[in-house]
Length: 331
Image 1 (cartoon, one colour):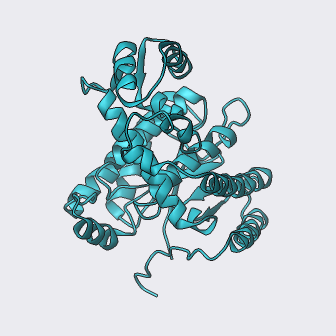
Image 2 (tube, rainbow, N blue to C red):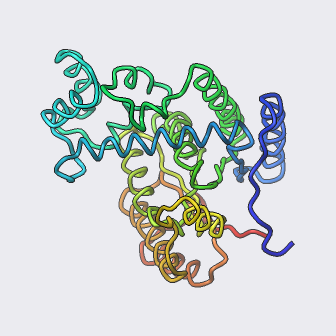
């Protein structure tokens, strides 16, 4: 039917989630048989408890807020001294323990720590290691998962890895759908793990796993660029489906109900501008760095499609034999 709402799967049991794996596996096989090198899509909420995804997202959001407290200069970078001072403020630890943490997370050993490095340290499954040393019970400590929740998170991740491996074996690309904002940080974290393994530049010339960016979100461009930086740093192919978004009324209503600023752009024009800017930045990156990055321009908007095609022509991106830019619409 016209304007059919995007679906969120209801969680019933772990057994149901295992059955969903088999349904998605059948879909991957169908794509392999009908459209080699085609695309299959999945929703992470079908593979685990949505409430757990929301909990994971809270952990990730609180981790980002904690980094902002460490980033006293608001430069996006934290010096080793700033890190030591703030770590002592929020966690109980000896100097040698803090030194070891800094050594482990300052991956490029440049004397500075950014959010990407900080987030690697505070992975949801590793969070209890740190929060048990909290000097006070704050939002991050309250968001810490229990042993049971960690086991469920790991099981969800295993289901995703099973399907990603199936897609890789079949030569099928796997699109991970975007969902409600309350789930999205957790979904992004799970997709990042998949991309690091299945889009690894040392093992494949083409990406298997695509994340989805909803450009009606005010932070869409920032998120895409941070993830692009992650792909460079950790050596995997960046791959993205770019959409405008499917949950506009839900997100605005939830923001109003809970009393926070709407995460959605205030106008369609702002959403259109964000969409076109994200597509342009990714196409320019593809032009400058060569094959590897892939992007799906998923839109019914004629202007956005024509704009992307014209830009591809100007940049000399040829996709006839080895497509790295894909176009998609819903029917």
